[in-house]
Amino acid sequence: MGDASTTHVEDDMARDLFAGIPVTDYAAALPWYERLFGGPPAFLPNDVEAVWELAANRYVYIVQDPARAGNALVMSFVDDLDQRVAEIARRGIEPAGRETYDGGVTKVTYRDAEGNEISFGGGL
View (cartoon, helix red, strand yellow):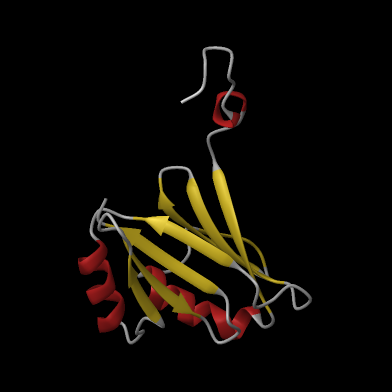
């Protein structure tokens, strides 16, 4: 990739990642996200925020923020894409879209009631 003098952002950063999804009504959004992610949040920092740990030190959270709601784009690559999509379907949520790109990478997109897009990809 780069020469030896190239510094990667990750070389100087903490290893935790938080991806935020703003929603208008936290209480209304929470049950949908619990079904999408397969369970309750890992922790609740306050009355209008819920956090799920998708992988070690990799978090997705919803937060009540009406001014920003509906504009999130979050994607996570997984090893078990088809199994994950089937499990989410058993919990009553169907994908809004599925795309397969050159090289075999597949992206499955879900949209919450406000239009936030949460996608899972796999098949490298």
